[in-house]
Amino acid sequence: MPSVSAERYWNPVLETLPPEKLRCLQFEKLKRIVFWGYEKSKLYRSLYDAAGFSPQDLKGWEDLAKIPMVTKEDYRKAQAKEPWPYGDALCVPLEQVTEYHQTSGTTGQPVYQADTWQDWEWWTECWSYILWAQGFRPSDRVFLPFGYNVFIAFWAGHYAAQKLGCEVVAGGVLNTEERLLKIKEVRATALMGTPTYLLNMAETCEKKLGFPARELGIKKILCAGEPGASVAGTKERITEAWGAEVFDHVGATEVGGWGFECTHHPGGIHVNEAMFLVELLELDSNAPITQPERLGRIVITAFDRKAQPCIRFDTKDLGMWSAEPCGCGRTFRVLKGGVLGRADHLTKVKGVLFSPVAVEEVVRSIRELGDEYELIVTKKGDVDQLILKVELLPEHQGQEARVKEELERQLRLKTNLHYTIEFHPFGSLPRYEVKAKRFKDLRKPH
Picture 1 (cartoon, rainbow, N blue to C red):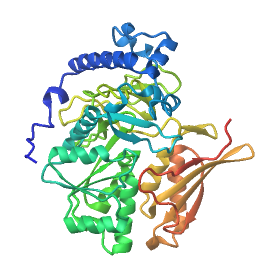
Picture 2: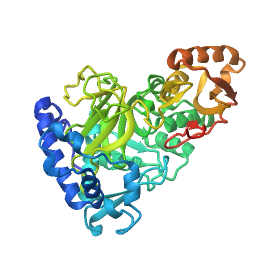
Picture 3: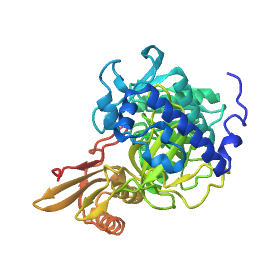
Picture 4: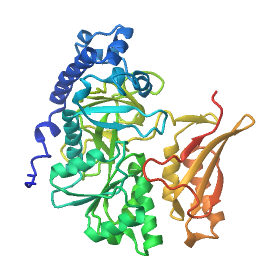
């Protein structure tokens, strides 16, 4: 593959476009995809007709709220019918679909995602901007330690790394120990994975292979799939374990790779505003949030995806705009702290609004604790109870009382709630390769 020039994925025409010109570009793209969805998709046409909305009504940004939002449940209801399995969500003839993926199914029935070859090129282009912003270059040998399956996972990362000119080593069917040994054998320089699995790999390297993961020579790591890489304590653990520079990335099967952390580490993630429209809406209404540092629901439109469009998709993720621009020179706005959790995980416990990400921040900040934990919300009579299961590192056995006191103190400061702390033998809590399922709300629906 020919070498890739430094200018290819540092695109000042788009990435440093003045905000007012960027907004004009976004609006033209928004109109195009809204007309496309209405004309080609039974799903969008039915949503828009039911709401009394016509694409002709979209005359300015003030009309954005008139466009109905689409949810994962809308996709589910529209699919599993002819043309199988995409049903009313499909906008192109079935023979034009060349890529099949689906959501992980962690929140219910998976959504089937159709892409044409042009769509998949767009996916790869989005990821190419992400990788270049994080310092991936043709000189890198990138190891991908994930099982290549129907879940989208790091498929686009694989092709984007190749597009940049990187050498890609796929570790699909290998187990964790075999992947670590292969990284050592081929002298890989870069790695992609979920924060959970990267910590799992580092633990396995130390306990099973007898040496720390930082001796493997990995220089840069891209994280995805969980908010952990934007959580200071989690990011610090990955950095220390691997001796590498760690970056966050955000995407979704239905949306695409829409957000990335750059080498300036702005304390959050850039939104790729040339390819996506990201809105923040109030948690208890659909009112837009434009001011910085106010928590809102993330709603996204992918401008250039045609087979199965994503127009005002309610991701259920939470975020807030940063007040400060990034020093890298990009004018793409930054979401402070990245994705800060999920609206469907945001719940009231004992009358207090609670996000499980706050618990991750505390657990990962205490050095005596292992990487894994489990958080359970249950009910005893009429009283909510929070049970936090943790593991003490072997070298700190016998220090449970001191660690428990510190853990309870920090949790009280961070969340204003009381927890029942359970210490479990090291290695006994579940380990995950892709998305972790550490938070469980076992209360009966109200």
